[in-house]
Image (cartoon, rainbow, N blue to C red; front, side, top):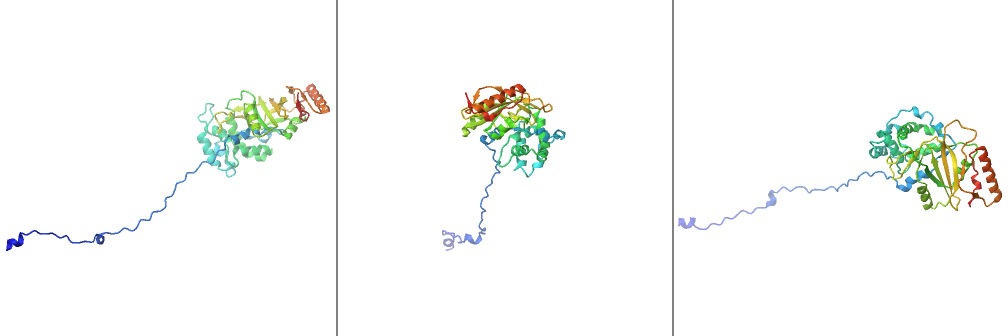
Length: 327
């Protein structure tokens, strides 16, 4: 009996358990919405059409710009940051663009420009939204107000230090503009001496002419400058143009002029004169490249008589309002 009791097959029954009784439930995880990282975009640099505008602003003035900056050479050559410090808060995002100029300028330089000198040239050629360094400086020149130009003395001193190290312009350089009666009045004046202000030029008149004609400018003036101590800044700029710079203060004389199309567009050639004490009359005789005739015979005769008088007296003067047609 005992063996029958112990020798039978046994079935082990596992106790039933509820696993949820022993499981610790974690609180639900609440995920925060993903935050997308946004990169700070560089302020946009304007395209070529905007940078081309600097070659369409004639730098001719009857006020000697050297009088506006008299004493600037006594300023020390400082860093670009210090040179432009007076305009902190006045020029949009200036500190950013100073850093960009220092990062992108041509340095080391084969012309031995320092880092700050190279950056001073580079930032002058940069164009961005609102008013950039070039725009603000041009406003100061145009004001002909020494008090508005004086804050630029340190920058101009740094710029001039770089300018003097750059290669000279090898040939005539060019600007252009829409036909401007006020400009013609300046050139027609017997008494006013003409000077160059600070500005940018191109070595090809065709580049300027083509741009103006493509933008519906039917009557234009092309202006050439020769022997005005211009400098090439090619390779030192923020734009692709073959840019040349004229520093202010060159005394100018007209050497020749001509009508170039049926719309009475003009080409005027200037040559730099020695910076001697101002004479009573200017002493470069303009050279006639073409013969002109006016629809009004009386006006044409008046023009010829005035031109002959100019030849005899060596007065650099030409009555532009008498020129209307080309033979």
